[in-house]
Length: 443
Image 1 (cartoon, rainbow, N blue to C red):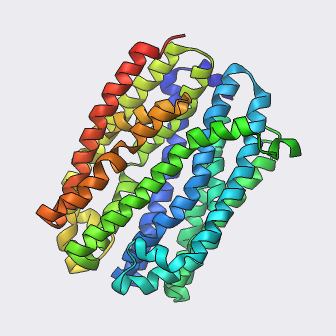
Image 2 (cartoon, rainbow, N blue to C red):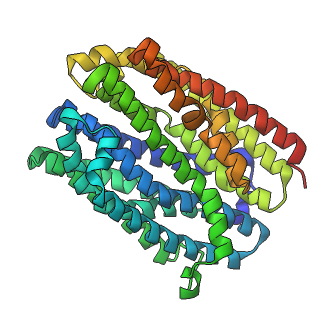
Image 3 (cartoon, rainbow, N blue to C red):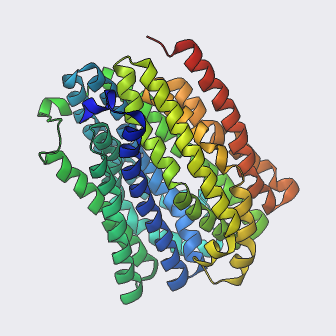
């Protein structure tokens, strides 16, 4: 299958990779949305705020696995493009060892420092008790989530996008069913919501383990491949660390965001952002799918030293993603009230959220260029520019904006920070990517 990355029509190949990735992200996002609807309707508004506080911590730990997966899959894609299967196999083994070692270490640290960690992330006032219950329940499922997130891009790099999709679909379906069981049928409150989420993480991790030991996995490892190799770990960490740093930056953003929201709008403002965040996860799934589909194709052809196919992959991905993002933008502008009413019947939220949602999505049509530009450097193994471009939106622009603008514009300052950061990050990424293609993309 991987050989097709170097021969098949780019548009057709991108669709084969992007559609399963998009479907997987869609189902996962729907799961997050349904989860929010269930806890909002069956537990209460503070439950939405509690999940908004806790999930960034869980996602940061699981991002270690995702980072190792993306970093390793970049090395594997380029190795397969060169025909070097031995390196690909050893990298695969090192990814497994790194993920298990680091994810369990961070889970132990997170559990030990639970209370101050939750306080830092915004678990204040009425949010504190439900956030603590939720955190203690889901935390032990996080290593399996990290393992699944490591496996997802790796499976895609092996040319098996449908199996990568299943790693996202199966836990989402499990979580929805278990939410009904543990929140509605057996009213266990936040502990029930956490239990459903933790078990769904186990389903995802279990499926990835099944794939790795099945005949579908083309990279067969031995015990020697599990032994960490310094030069390979360095490459995996250099590229994968970008994802971890990005998630860490997002976690820092959430801390500052929740601080500003709580200070200028109270618990309700945090719940408003919780809804906006869920809509963002859902609405942008096809654009993120294009980005995920882009990575293995660009990496393989870069490894094969086919500059023309790499350029075509960049242009096709940006074109597809921009059209899709523009359609999403129009839909949100037309139906903001309907979107918000899906999540809650609380009158305060119904009044405050639609306008905030529209403002936050104003720059949606331009975001594909920023996503593909950052992903390109990660795909081809250029860690430093990939890191800089990845951090532009959340780190360089959004964190200062969500801290400073509310001082002058209140909660509205938080919402207008999002499109400003998007536009600035996209402009810089476009200029840098154009320069890179002109000066360096030739063999």
